[in-house]
Image (cartoon, rainbow, N blue to C red; front, side, top):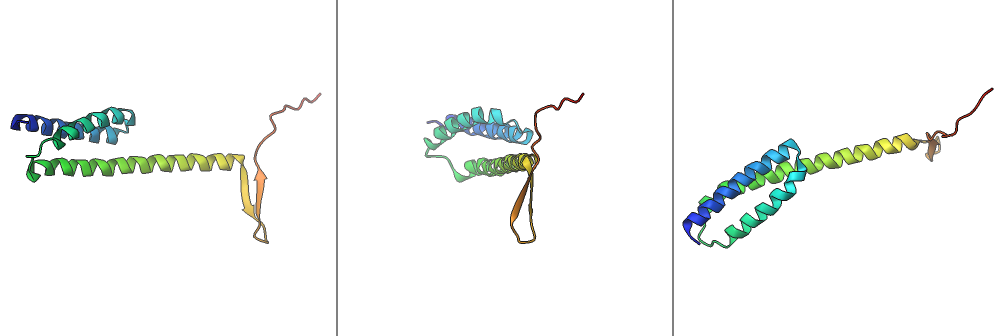
Length: 119
């Protein structure tokens, strides 16, 4: 491939990595899939160009590392929310305590869904 082709691919990937950063910061994870497909296509194109220098690839590498850190933070946040929601569900179901002998004891918090009619 020509030098112009590699320059266009480098610029396209650079722009895409900036878009990916914006998507990650905004939390727009739905767009991340489409960007990933395009990123894969661009990287495949760059891999087919053996004449790229380290200097040309270094700025892209820094952006990829930055975006990986942002993605890891987003995933950690999602895991934290999922764990918190699971804990809230457990609390709604009842309370667990330990008695004097160290045995776990559960108090149900489930309410009866039946109405009591009084005269």
